[in-house]
Image 1 (cartoon, one colour):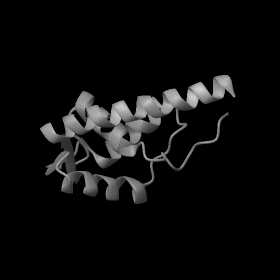
Image 2 (cartoon, rainbow, N blue to C red):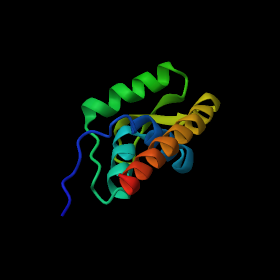
Image 3 (cartoon, rainbow, N blue to C red):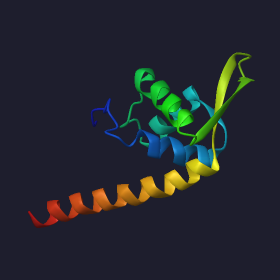
Length: 110
């Protein structure tokens, strides 16, 4: 079994924006579960990384948050992507593909 990675090495905003765009509004724990489930438990998102990232993304205008009541009757902040977040996602995806393509090229030809 692969060891789970604590750090997403700068990919967290990309993952959060993509998940919120595809899944619609989610609370922080829902975002965490989705990343962990979709990565077959390889990626782990710590609260100490997620909530500061969500706050920065909200300040940047990429996401917006509102208070709601969860399915378990708890008050939660629901996050969703804004138009600026959609544009940022496109930029982030472009950078991600450029970097991973370059790494793949180096690994193949080193």
